[in-house]
Amino acid sequence: MDKIKNYSTYGLAYLLWAVSVVMGYWVVSTVRTTVITLLVVSTIDRAESDARERFYAGMQVRAADVWSIVLMGLALIVIIVLLENLYRTAVQPGKLWARFSLVTAIEFDLLFLARLTTAILSGVVESLTWANFVAPAALLVAAVLFYWLWVSIRKPKAAA
Image 1 (cartoon, rainbow, N blue to C red):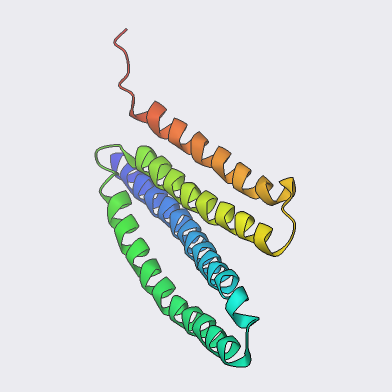
Image 2: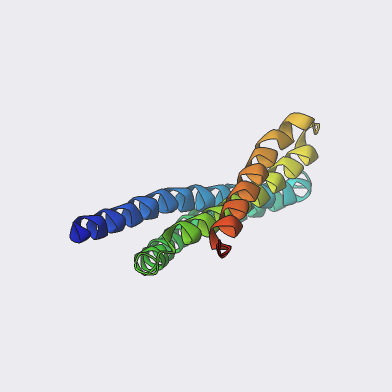
């Protein structure tokens, strides 16, 4: 019976690892989109000046777009390897849920920052409304919830 519990705990660790890797992909692709948006918005003034500047601005954005795919792949490989080790080693000491909560909270924080930056940048191009901040607010709430879970899981139980 003890082996079955051990196998199921490792199975849960790999399931949580898969969830974290999918969220990691979401984070990396959102950050990539934010960086490309930041680069496009920063080249708007130069692109409007003359044809030469427009050409170079377009080349810079395309180069950043292509290289960001390579960097995104490398970041995902690092995320996959580090999270697998982090979750696998957390099974025996019983810290799996605490580590998952912390990793998920950090991922939601990064998503919040990327979406907030995108919302602010969209205010440069078009009018800024409260609707631009709904998704970042929801991500912030999710991050706070997972930080709260992490803190509550890590608290030592009071002796009765």
